[in-house]
Image (tube, rainbow, N blue to C red; front, side, top):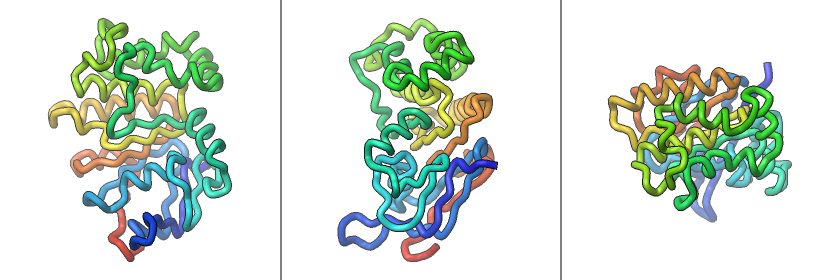
Length: 228
């Protein structure tokens, strides 16, 4: 089976500070899901940034979707992320004055491979987007609303829809349920994982809520500094 990610002896430090983390080994098969947990400040979001190619690998080995991230240029990492990954940022990174439609269709407008993937399964990207917003609990009535008029919870769902557009092979999610109340977190997570599973995508998610971990194939606790 192919690997969604494979890393060994991976560490990262900011400047001359001690390493945030040092991970001896971690492997995730394509189609499996990974839950990453650990206390604040242990480097969870930094690790996600490295998986997404936003942060450069300086020590150790990291393969994502079969690509050696240390061997890719910044342009190569951006292309890998844009064509094959969906990222749900902790701050959402939506374009606030554009409507839901413009935000969720952005990946398919920027990357032809994502548009082709949506068209192959759904006929066109808009059909996939409308299906996803309803699947993830957003009414079609928000389709033409600027995202800055939505609640925080609705914006989080829009960010999830955008990440799933064009059937990416890897979904990276940084606290994707943080804006939801406890009653809705499990429901939303199940919808997200089920949608990713139907698209044959792996999910790597960080959360402070350990009650979500049992929904995942694999749970990884970030090591304490200086420990593998």
